[in-house]
Length: 367
Ligand code: MRU
Image 1 (tube, helix red, strand yellow):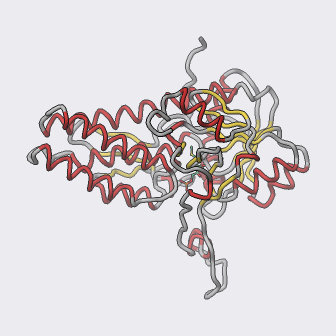
Image 2 (cartoon, helix red, strand yellow; image 1 turned 120 degrees about the horizontal axis):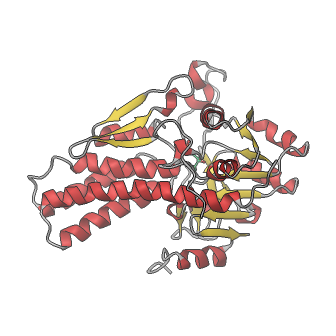
Image 3 (tube, protein in one colour; image 1 turned 90 degrees about the vertical axis):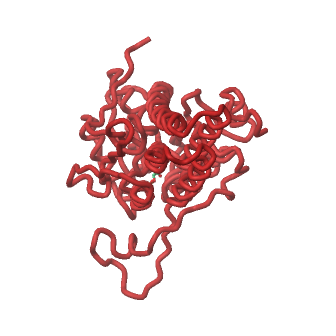
């Protein structure tokens, strides 16, 4: 066994400060790459705001932040009876769930926190022990996420050969998770294995997660990265510059349809046209086995101003309509493989996704 690959990100995306009572510290991603500043979040409303504004973003990081958000909501509530505390927990989870609709990791983490609270309540624990138990569960979600990133990195690195040039969209790195990332983890791992790689990062309109965040974290890690605007991906692929595409996901339906940042579908179609493998890297917490296919995935629509006056400058005539869906769905037929912490699903379809989820114990009780 080789030594685990260290997280190359110089800052912690999500951290809990202190024990109980404590608070959550996030890197304020809306200010990157110009400023590296932190945001201390002390209550549930602050966490909902941070998630909505994309101060913390990326599906797994949203899940970790939401779990800590639950702790922010229950800490200091020892005087409630255990039954009352559990009712309060429900309300806290419902408030956090309204922050953003698409990344299923948010709902996955909240469900895990709620179920854990209920299990502790059923054992007759008092309110203090319940709160301590919820804090421990949030820390476990964070720890496990970091471990899953390492495992996805190891599986994904097997697909990367020395000298390859990779294309990625949005940011699915350390800034999007509690560890070293999903789509970027294989790159970090390949690099640690001594392979030379280069990366093209789509700028990712309208909020520029590729230009601002992926380029920032890859260059910090010493991986050569070239930013292109989203519309240039076709040109770059047609020039034969790209050996493989690696992206993350916000929600994967039971048939393997992949929801990810707007523009991912375009890249998948282009990759298919140019016979370049299109890999999706995501932990099992990103799978939504209750949604049969991509048509059932809720797509967040964000304010028109993000398109019309991005970063403080109006670029669309006043009064002109703008449509701003934040995500799209790539049909599973266009996906070469999905890389998870439990291994790789080649050419995903319902049977193959179900087989992996059963093997991992996720489908017990759902199928
Ligand atoms: O709107 P964002 O920045 O939260 O969107 C993030 C993405 O689309 C990522 O690709 C996805 O969450 C996977 S992150 C490991």
